[in-house]
Length: 421
Picture 1 (tube, rainbow, N blue to C red):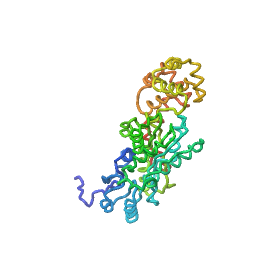
Picture 2: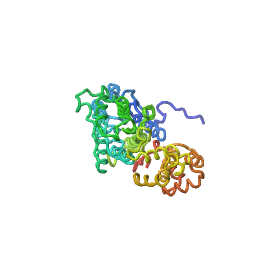
Picture 3: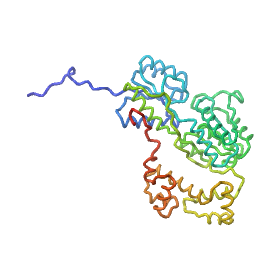
Picture 4: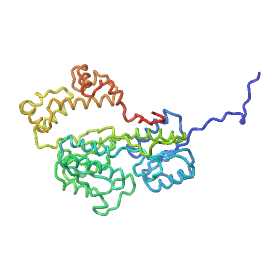
């Protein structure tokens, strides 16, 4: 029997990959995290044909987007122009859209964002651990998420009996023009400097994102204000380059940008398959804080305790003992322990353990180092002791903790009833 001959009319018709427009710029760490999360989803599921217009934040090529035809959109909708084009696309083509911006300029679209209220609470807690009594907030009036973070931060600080001095902003203070594009910070460097000089010291300043945090650090430098001793500064986004190249390096809250991207992609997949979502709002809490020099301080009036904490932070992972801390500060162990408990509510030994286990967490989460190596790098002579102490402290052994927390930026949030659930 001769082999069948297939002509065009007899060829099987294979389904085409979904055509998805991803309208997200790559100008900052958060946006790149979103794209990485989307890429991770596409790599792990059926492939998409992705339309990714190159553009700056808030300024995509609207003509290309308006003429595009496809099956779904993931977009960071931050300007009315983008919202109008996408609204037309969604209506004319009846395609689903997932918004990954907190601006909410496309109310009909489900949206995935970081939990700004959780970010504000984390910032307040970070400063509370350092015993601050004075607080400030520097936001960006153009963004709804900045207002949300300010409100949550203020509420958390107020609950502890303190007030937050909010930087007035360019429009309210001097009537200056906003930044030329969405990606640029407001041009109010001199106003920030004057505001910082007016604040009681020491003060903890929460900046709504890392670029704003760098502006605060620069204003401190120009004004001769010491960081972190007089002003401690915390940002959001944990952009490694921006934070690491700041002077001093900037502490920053770590949003789950990759998780948001993967979640958005999973939700869009469900919508393109004809499913209905059980809700429209999807908020992801931050992953933690990358603590750097800009908040490495204690705002208390006991110089001995402050100095002891600095010694412990510098040497805890080298296995330093309480007696050695006391000797280095030319005081007795009894006096040191009394002052420590009086001012911080815990002993120097507990502070050493806290620093050691914070480092253990970091190495478990970010590396594949064996437990014996981690124990040595964190000041534990015996890995068995570290394992037992870790399990007592966290409720599970370090190996299980690592499985649960490793590579959190790549984790896929649960999607009830859909992919990843």
